[in-house]
Image 1 (cartoon, rainbow, N blue to C red):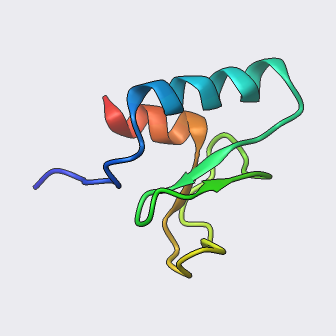
Image 2 (cartoon, rainbow, N blue to C red):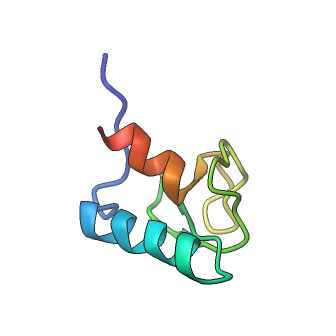
Length: 69
Protein backbone atom coordinates (compact mmCIF):
# COMPACT_ATOMS: atom_id res chain seq x y z
CA UNK A 1 0.00 0.00 0.00
CA UNK A 2 1.48 3.35 -1.00
CA UNK A 3 1.06 6.59 0.89
CA UNK A 4 -1.12 9.21 -0.82
CA UNK A 5 -0.95 12.93 -0.25
CA UNK A 6 -3.15 15.71 -1.58
CA UNK A 7 -2.81 16.17 -5.35
CA UNK A 8 -1.95 19.87 -4.99
CA UNK A 9 1.33 19.01 -3.26
CA UNK A 10 3.49 18.92 -6.36
CA UNK A 11 7.23 18.39 -6.69
CA UNK A 12 7.62 22.08 -7.47
CA UNK A 13 5.82 23.16 -4.26
CA UNK A 14 7.85 20.79 -2.14
CA UNK A 15 11.17 21.85 -3.70
CA UNK A 16 10.29 25.51 -3.16
CA UNK A 17 9.39 24.72 0.46
CA UNK A 18 12.73 22.99 1.00
CA UNK A 19 14.59 25.95 -0.49
CA UNK A 20 12.74 28.36 1.78
CA UNK A 21 13.56 26.21 4.78
CA UNK A 22 17.27 26.08 3.92
CA UNK A 23 17.86 29.65 2.76
CA UNK A 24 15.46 31.78 4.81
CA UNK A 25 13.92 31.91 8.26
CA UNK A 26 10.68 30.34 7.04
CA UNK A 27 9.74 26.79 8.02
CA UNK A 28 7.05 25.67 5.58
CA UNK A 29 4.98 22.55 5.81
CA UNK A 30 2.08 20.98 3.98
CA UNK A 31 -1.14 19.31 5.04
CA UNK A 32 -1.18 16.01 3.20
CA UNK A 33 -4.95 15.72 3.70
CA UNK A 34 -6.18 19.05 2.28
CA UNK A 35 -3.05 20.56 0.65
CA UNK A 36 -2.91 23.69 2.86
CA UNK A 37 0.40 25.49 3.37
CA UNK A 38 1.67 25.86 6.93
CA UNK A 39 4.39 27.97 8.48
CA UNK A 40 6.35 27.25 11.62
CA UNK A 41 6.93 23.56 10.91
CA UNK A 42 10.22 21.93 11.76
CA UNK A 43 11.78 20.36 8.65
CA UNK A 44 11.16 16.89 10.09
CA UNK A 45 7.66 17.71 11.42
CA UNK A 46 5.16 14.87 11.35
CA UNK A 47 1.47 14.78 12.12
CA UNK A 48 1.02 18.40 13.20
CA UNK A 49 -2.61 19.51 13.34
CA UNK A 50 -3.90 21.38 10.28
CA UNK A 51 -5.59 24.69 11.05
CA UNK A 52 -7.62 24.37 7.83
CA UNK A 53 -9.11 20.87 8.03
CA UNK A 54 -8.22 19.82 11.60
CA UNK A 55 -6.52 16.57 10.60
CA UNK A 56 -3.12 15.67 12.00
CA UNK A 57 -1.45 15.37 8.61
CA UNK A 58 0.87 18.38 8.44
CA UNK A 59 4.46 17.49 7.59
CA UNK A 60 7.54 19.68 7.19
CA UNK A 61 8.88 20.40 3.71
CA UNK A 62 11.90 18.11 3.99
CA UNK A 63 9.84 15.30 5.50
CA UNK A 64 7.34 15.69 2.65
CA UNK A 65 10.19 15.52 0.13
CA UNK A 66 11.43 12.25 1.61
CA UNK A 67 7.92 10.80 1.49
CA UNK A 68 7.58 11.63 -2.23
CA UNK A 69 10.62 9.54 -3.17
